Image (tube, rainbow, N blue to C red; front, side, top):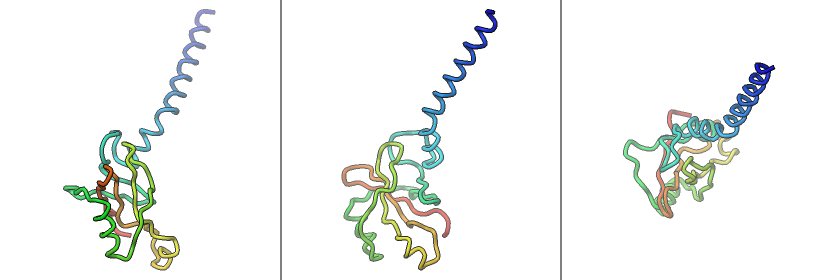
Length: 132
């Protein structure tokens, strides 16, 4: 009888641990897969978005919103859309290429550059890794 009780207690304990793992683990696992880090402070070492991977430059430079908008304006683009949130809670923003434009150029690339907003007027740029 005592052995049966021990088995039941161990079964419930392992079930509780399993439930706890599945309740807590998805966020850190997602952060590791999408951002390359478990760290929840600062800008991440990379960003995965729309099936592509984006990296900051070797020496990331913080830009103002005006500088980001000037960069976009050179290609006739304007406006930023928040597409994700980094593990630190910082918004990930970009100018998303509309589906009809992607179809016109026969590409599935959603954007070439995105930014992580690291302050009230501070953005760190991330460029597309690899080719279309």
